[in-house]
Amino acid sequence: MFEIKEVPELEAIFPGAVKHLMPRWEEIPAEFKEYRGTKWNGVFNDWFYHGAKNVKYKPKPGVDTAKAMRHVRAVMGSFEPKHEHKEAAVAYLLSQWFEDISYEKGGEPVYR
Image (cartoon, rainbow, N blue to C red; front, side):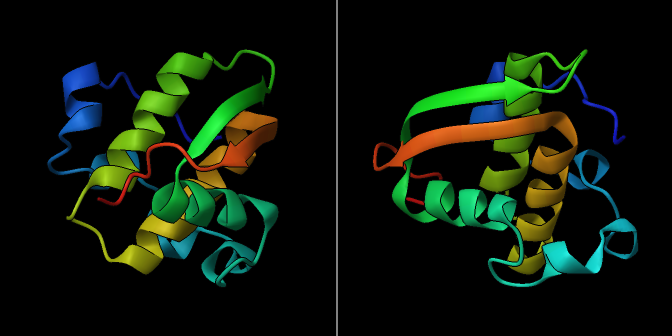
């Protein structure tokens, strides 16, 4: 499992360099590299472009949801990685840290 890093809230809101928060492209399984290849890619795209509200997380044992989501938000909001790498990395990280996530489309998108 990729380690959940401690990301301060300010860095999650205004991320800079995030490569240390992402698995390398070669480490990400192929299905996460396809557009909407997994349900987690769909979560990324819905949240990134449309926002998500009424989100309910089902974390895997030992996962701190708030810490994991700050980590994910920093990656999603950064301009550093290519979009394809960002989507694949976030989808893969979500799949490692959560059993499931339910939400409604809408709310505040990451991309503004």
